Length: 479
Ligand code: ADP
Ligand code: ZN
Ligand code: MG
Image (cartoon, rainbow, N blue to C red; front, top):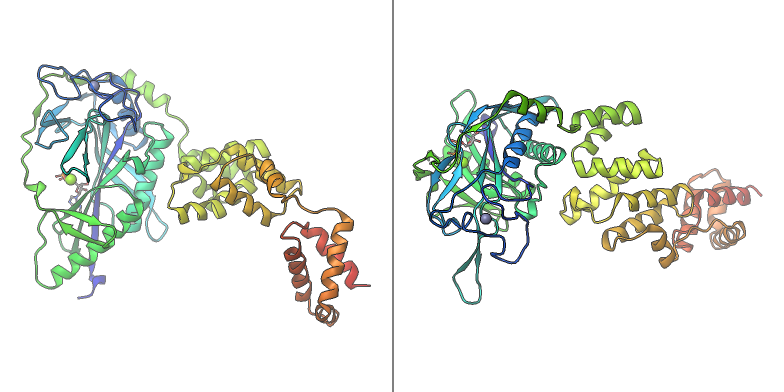
């Protein structure tokens, strides 16, 4: 059989750190990047006798996430102990939710690989606490534990196994990330581990039951997740084709080798001995509470998209692109508002800016310059102060060392030459050194004009006003 005869099945368990000010069961700050073990207390370090108190904001944020992903909100839910030993978890259990999660049975709509709308169902969203971090010490050997992250609130969003390709998985994750950012419950900074996914993959022959899944835990790069799924699909098909069985296990994706490895300990064999957390009361939500959160939900990507098409006349493709990320969409609205040229802002974002981000492997929210900077760049081009080719150089500068575009062109001497006598001087010089082009043009070869303009641009290092160059060349050539 060929790999065409197999179907891929993927289900994702996504962990998102909530951006509440304080941790889930104590009042320690849940900020990132502090000195090790500075945001800790007896509760989040698991001291015997220390009692947890549930942070109400965590419930609110999780309910928001549930509503934004079309889930049913459970009015009755509770916390459970999930017992396991690991050195970054001093209590030797995590407080999670087992059989009564806060949110259930939702969906996120994405496009399938043929561009048709497709719903990826969400099984559940529950709240839990994050673990600390082990810092492996290269010099002295051993590990040091930093408990600043212990007790940072997480939501876990578990999808049904509805995903059928690595590209669908990518679109699902990006959509989920954008939703969480729109409702402002998580910054979703993947490089800081605020968003990470356990990736479950299986294959089966079409029309046969699902195969056994393997799981790759804690992945935090969209690119690696796609590669890992594609790799696992091929590997599992190969195994099945060679008469081997797939066993349910945790695998580790190695980004450099581009392959998965078996983990030494098989975590799937673990028994967590869940039981209701005796130190916390059950969570009971009123209809009014849920209704109020629903009313306060901000504008979602779908409605922004409609607005961009209807009010600003953007194409569906452009509107889709901009709303794919809250960072793009916010920058678009703010920069457009300032320079009043929404179309130009959109073009910068979906061509050069997206390309540079891709090259640098950055996410849209890591754009180093502000909406004011982008608006400034558009205005300089609109006013004819710089050409669009200089504009690209300004953009490179904005990525390297963000500052006011006007200041950049002043420093670099990139102001466009629009002075008639200066332009004429260049035109005459270029004509003089390219007599063949004059002959070609007169013989009807229009391309010669483009060539001459190009030469003049080279001569002025891209600073000449292209419109004036064109006109002036035509004038001279017709003489
Ligand atoms: P856990 O991994 O914690 O045991 P579950 O049994 O709830 O949790 O399943 C976790 C994930 O595995 C879910 O996202 C689900 O969609 C996915 N999954 C279940 N069965 C399959 C399968 N046959 N192939 C791929 N993914 C699967
Ligand atoms: Zn604490
Ligand atoms: Mg799992």
